[in-house]
Image (spheres, helix red, strand yellow):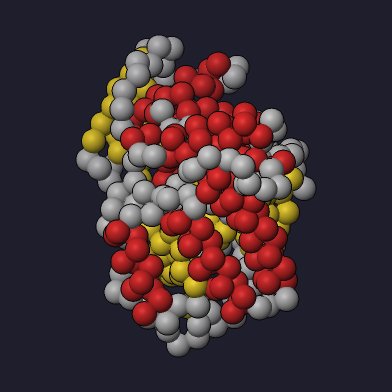
Length: 353
């Protein structure tokens, strides 16, 4: 299922305001595989970012208020300057939509969120997608919109992210995870039936800054490994043998993580949550030892989840801080600060007001 014929029909106009919502996401398993043409198993959250767009009469301005941050922005619609922080996502969305031929109009954007920032829950993708929808991207093909939002992160914030976050935000389904094959962008729903078990996230307390961290370095290492192996992507790698360190470890993680994704799908399909927990632990070990994206704070958070009885726990998102994901058996609540997460719907128009 490609979601290539799924479009959103509303757009800013008609004299009223448009309100768009985009969820955060949790990646159950399949980390750092997206930009290597691999497999991922994310699901959208019920929490996320809401952007309300109200037309302005005349002018060439976009006025922005981020209410949760008590911060503002103001830029020319036709020539947004480059800035840093959350403003880069909003300005980049406006610029990339216009490059794609979407006609925008002056407006005021109000941004609210109940999603923690820099916790590995894809708040940046949620902000970008919600902004694009509120500005008028509702008629775009969802896969193409995911590509556009990825360009915003790549070119406006300096983070060389793949398409995992954007596809999860745009293509998820309630009560399900989605298996994404990043090579052909095939999206397949996978029922996420946990019974009395619970998935929780726990913030490690170490904020993530993808563009400033080792994320881009990991991407460069994967590209270098492909050059040495003579392949187009690590999806085609069958062994890490013969590569110099640390490239051999990076390749080993990608190969084994792809295997773990399909093993997790099989475990969910047969209701084997003990095996799912084991796979989460194995993924964390690989991310810590082979991909080297963990931190002391993350390790303490994982240990706290395991001590609370988690069947499995792992670092989540790009790494270098952020949150961890844990699977708890019935009757266990997790460590202090753990927040239950469940699969919700994809990005959508929340209202026309």
